[in-house]
Amino acid sequence: MDNGYKSPDYILFFTVMFLLGVGIIMVYSSSAVAAYANYHDSYYFLKRQIIWASLGVITLLVTMHIDYHVWRKLAKPILFVTLFLLILVLIPGLGRVVNGARRWLGFGSIYLQPSEIAKLGMVFFVSHGLAQAQTKILSFRKGLLPQLLMLLLVFGLILKEPDLGTALSIAGTVFILLFAAGAKVFHLGAMGAVGVLGIVAAIIVEPYRMKRLLAFSNPWSDPLDTGYHIIQSLYAIGSGGLFGVGLGRSREKFLYLPEPHTDFIFAILGEELGLIGTVTVIVLFFLFAWRGFRIAIAAPDIYGSLLATGITTMIMLQALMNIAVVTASMPVTGIPLPFISFGGSALIFTLAGVGVLLNISRYVSL
Image (cartoon, rainbow, N blue to C red; front, side, top):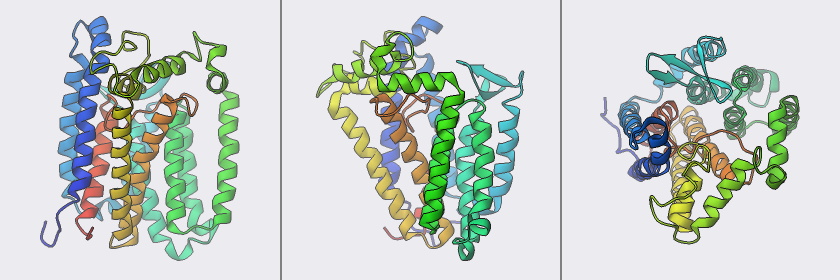
């Protein structure tokens, strides 16, 4: 099956492996205290992260060897299965509720987050739809409307969980894909304006989102509740200075900073490894973006180009949103840092996407 293939982009591959290694180290460092307090096992989260990372790397290696055109044929079935799972997760008794959000389906001791499948599923579906509609891309009704209707359906289901962060990352990825496919600037501007109004409405109708927005503008107005996450995160990053307090020596992880091994792991990284550590991780993400978009530009067909653009954008948007939240550059929204935060579904499906990206790289000269 590999006849005629070039070697995959090893710079991209090793960049991802390095980020994954940093993630495993930081998951242990940031979670050991909470793991011991809650499970009497300091290695509780580390052991699970190693299992998920191993499964993710295997998935990456498998998808790296599957011709990326296969995903074009499977785009609609994958998305329809995803929609079915997104509906199931909202049904009481089937969806697992954690911290007030119903985002997981349980199968025995294993939990699946359908919204993570939706990220990749939407990239497959929209890339296929836009590649198919290239001659109609300037027409809103024929070129853009089918993709937007599916986006609204997926966005609404994920928002219902509620998970505004994931919904926004999917919407942002689709918007970039529309731009890359050659949609009219007027159409993009109009969609952007409607999207902003929709986000404002989503914030207004949910009191906790409005509280988060107000806390973002002035976290010290409510330091023990809505502003608590931001304040503790800034304490962690500020304490790190240039070189950090040392790996494993964070103070914020002693049950001060909530979710130190998931949504706020970047804050612990900044505290322990300092500015040097955070800048290194950011540079690695931009290296990933450089290689990903180079693959997109050099792809042999429009579908491969859009697929590479979508996967790269999906991962980079999540990284930018997570880092923005942790550094108080945007309101708190629960979204993990790709490759680094603790998590099963997110890690496996993100690495699956990287495998598809690496497969496209085997058809190009970089």
